[in-house]
Amino acid sequence: MSVRKLNASKPEASKLFVQDMNTDREFRSHAPGFWPSATGTEWNDWRWQLRHRVGSLDEAARHINLTREEREGLLLTAHKLAFSITPHFFNLIEPDNPDCPIRRQVMPLAAETTISPGEMADPCGEDSHMPVPGLVHRYPDRVLFLVTDRCASYCRYCTRSRVVSGVGEQELETDFEAIYRYLEQHTEVRDVLLSGGDALLLSDERLRKILARLRAIRHIEFLRIGSRVPIFLPQRITPELCAMLREFHPLWMSIHVNHPRELTTEVRDALGRLADAGIPLGNQSVLLAGVNDDKDTMRTLIHKLLRCRVRPYYLYQCDLIHGSAHLRTSVARGIELIESLRGHTTGYAVPQFVIDAPGGGGKVPVSPGYVLYHDTEKVVLRNYEGRVFEYPEKSAGDATAVRPESVLDY
Ligand code: SF4
Image (cartoon, rainbow, N blue to C red; front, side, top):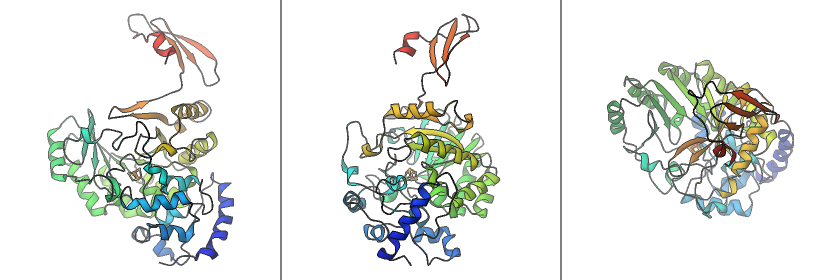
């Protein structure tokens, strides 16, 4: 691998980032960045990107000025969630800014070893809703199929960090045949979400086999893939992959972008290829302190997503995963952000803020209080400007009254 030398590269890279910080709204390519010797063919080859991931303290220190907390964090990653960043994504990091919003998402800190009250290894209670190894069946008509434990890069707040990357507390032992048998027998399942890890790290052939097996089960109506690969590794979204995926419609995809700078020209083009293949795209962001917990960043992110033909879908309150307190914000902050968007911009751009109820309660929508009062005769509403309106209930017989105190007190 050819990389810039430490002293030669850092001042240059810092200068570049002063410009980038002011243009998060624009689509930019950061290639080849720290890999000036990579040829275009190499750079655009997803397997080259995977082979050249930055995965150790020494490799990271070659390019960026690490803080003591980061160095300590990096030393711990042999025993917990691994450290690994694709060259494409690594180029988005500001080398001299430890508060860089990209860096905060992927660079381990010693703070990850501090377990705060309420934090859990499995905050969404997935293990207790796993009838077959590798299959989570928590909601009545849909399942989560964990097809791999590997990702292109690793997010420090990952809700499944106990099991992804191969060095967590647990090992993922997906029993594929038992899962297909379970799904054949459970006719109530109409929706299967492929995740992990990241399903798009599998080869086209491997993924095709899984999708074909699922499509052969007649009561499964709808397939989804949850993936951060279009962001960490846009080179993986090849025309061949898109052609294969479109054989399995209806197939939807949830991507995961947290900060507008992640939407580079390469990512925009990869998302365009998926959209052109007829795949509806939604984004799931995680609300993270110092990353996207301010109104301007969130607004820029959602507008940029729409320009990439992606519907902002969920904004998640950060799960109570072990060692994540430094990345969590208050719930009030999330509600405030949604309130700053609803009515102030395109409705399609406004995600639903949700909390995954600790211990396995599933996603619960959390919204600003727009219903001030509701009984069998009327509903009293507040609009985005704070003006109050009354709407008559259709009839006392039809209405399900919400006890006013339950709206007003909570
Ligand atoms: S890409 Fe998804 S599964 Fe992988 S580490 Fe990030 S949040 Fe976890």
